[in-house]
Image 1 (cartoon, rainbow, N blue to C red):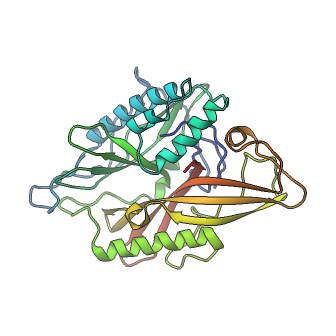
Image 2: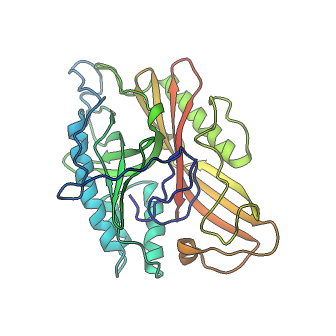
Image 3: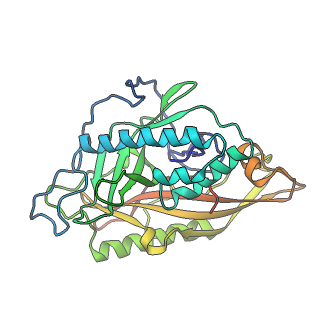
Length: 351
């Protein structure tokens, strides 16, 4: 998980770490929480973990992680390793390669941005980021590696103050174990409205979606890209409440009303293979990473980047400011009904 993440739980522009990106999501309801000796939240995992499949339940074999306790163990190990990397890459020689020990795939683009900002002199706050006890565990079963795991969990940070991400929203974290015994790495982390989270699949359910379900999810992911690109309404979605198009940026000198934004490119990272889908109770849960290229256009005169963005893209004035963002959208596709957006967040990235 990159040190420059800006989390957007579903309608509020609230920075989870330090970067200024754009996002849509639910209002946050923050509360103070205590931490254990290693900095991890100590609440006991409860509720709706994916049950362990029987030996004959699925042609894919047993889930890679089958209980909330096991998933929390994976998250605690990731927390420890991730925060160790964050502390190292903020200092000379700013070794980006360290990120590859904890993250993979699209998330490395955000890691690259944060590392470049540190190297260029941007002073990131001394903060540790932690995933708490899972409230949902969605495990994709597989007899072979790599094995994927999707977990819904609260996010906690330890720094100048302590605060949960919010009671109404949680992180959706996609982790992968590339080989047997290897450490789990994060591929993407999104956000979801807690109230809309589906339950895990029932015991004996094959967690891999059917070919028809996967085709539907890919179509919906493409509709969302088109919506962000040109405003075309995504016909397969019940609404766009939690995945609305990005409208503001806190990292420019432009204030609301002084600019308009144009998403001139929006595409799924990794093509169809980048669409992650998990069979859950009553449907399919999807987590999809996108590359967004946004042009911020001043209504008049010129503007410039500020804060972290300026450390990477420069602070020179222009009538057009361009950014590249890693966006992650999550949605639930119930059997026989329109898709329900769960959340959207983005962060600056260097691809």
